[in-house]
Image 1 (cartoon, one colour):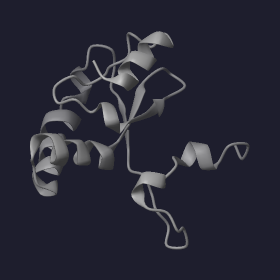
Image 2 (tube, helix red, strand yellow):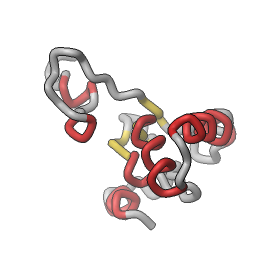
Image 3 (spheres, helix red, strand yellow):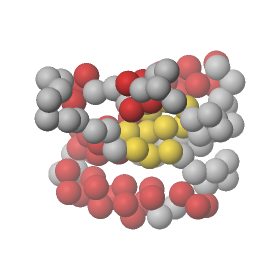
Image 4 (cartoon, helix red, strand yellow):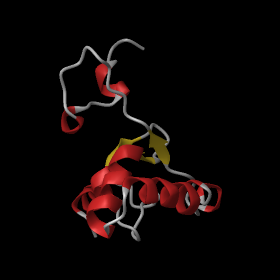
Length: 108
């Protein structure tokens, strides 16, 4: 079990849907208000590229066919899958991207 999944379990999210095969532990970026695990699409792609030796195109196709299409059948409900955005005026690389929720705290 991945480190982030261990933390989710310790925080009481043991019933939330998490992926085990393939392991997208490094793509977990949070939990929604209704206790669904939030995954970064780009980080899921990078997990498959790094760990399963897929090309980015193969990884995107795999996620589309094997993950997104299966979401309605997840026993504990679907995950939240987001695209992280980088804006031209931001001087960040992809490892420094924050979610929109983090950047908009207090603006809701």
